[in-house]
Image 1 (cartoon, one colour):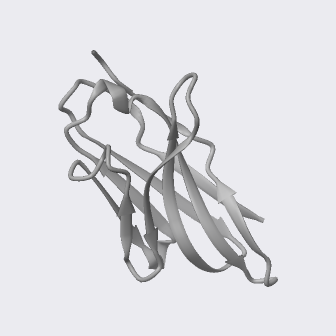
Image 2 (cartoon, rainbow, N blue to C red):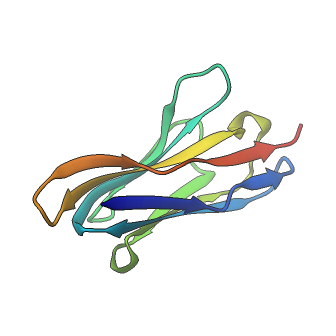
Length: 120
């Protein structure tokens, strides 16, 4: 059993900052890629940022230069530092992880989602 628990969402003014975290726990052998997605009302879920086990990162153009993804492999945790937030960043943010379990299964897992609201 693997669980992803997210935290850090909330209400913030435009131009403000938030830091999201996502901790994975359970029968984990390794975590290959961890990523953040978001979904606004009436829109499709989109990739925000991703990071490999080696630290390589990728960002959506809409957040490049404002958001920073990082991870602590010892803690099985991924972070998303969000600066200069805009109203269009308002969405439910989901953590995603590509995990190899100790029973050799390789699966994608999702966090429960955390609401980020940027006032306009």
